[in-house]
Amino acid sequence: MTAQGVQDVQALISAADIQARVQALAGEIRRDHPHGVHLVCVLKGAFVFLSDLSRALANGVTLDFIAVSSYGQGSTSSGQVQLLKDLDSPIEGRDVVIVEDIVDTGLTLAYLIQNLKSRGPASIEVMAMFRKPEALRSPVEVKYVGFDLPNEFVVGYGLDYAGRYRNLRDVGTLSPHVYS
Ligand code: IMP
Image 1: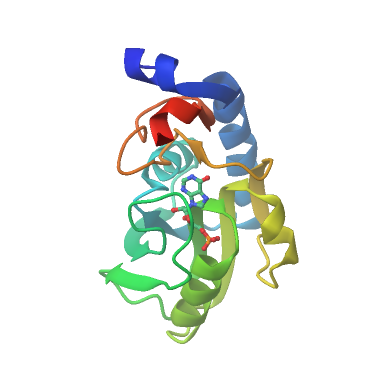
Image 2: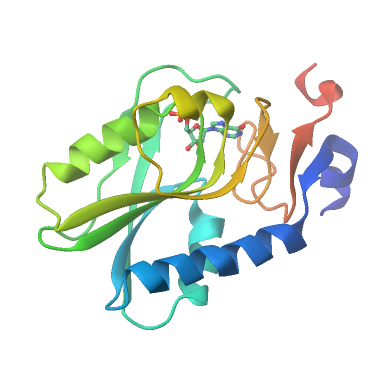
């Protein structure tokens, strides 16, 4: 963790635990998709997870990136999802796994699944590194989950607050002085 991160963030999940979980999730993907898979990374937050996950998988993995925005600059959802950057390649006939950083209300994923399904993939599944309690009330099915978290705003491992802390290796909560 950076010097700034040590002051601002109370760690919830250590870098070592995250790395161990990534290996286990990669094992699940290899088991379910022995012939390879097309990973769709949801920018920006999932870029760190995608980087670790893709390198933990064997050959046969292809990648693409999509960017959406639902939180703006703050720490609560705006309730509206905007497509900021589309995929570069068609997904028709491909086995797609959406790689997401964290699921909270499930609104972002609901939008993405509906959008990507309309392009005719052979299959579409979701992997999220983190999940908050609210997500369990969403109809969106998240097949692979790294960790269930308490209902708190967290940063690190790709997750930001106003653009900061994405580079921290641990995941943790922000000290109150950061918000004030
Ligand atoms: P949802 O649409 O409410 O499920 O929110 C999902 C998106 O909101 C994630 O992809 C993140 O970009 C962002 N998000 C949700 N909770 C957090 C958090 O605790 N920290 C940072 N970003 C979050």
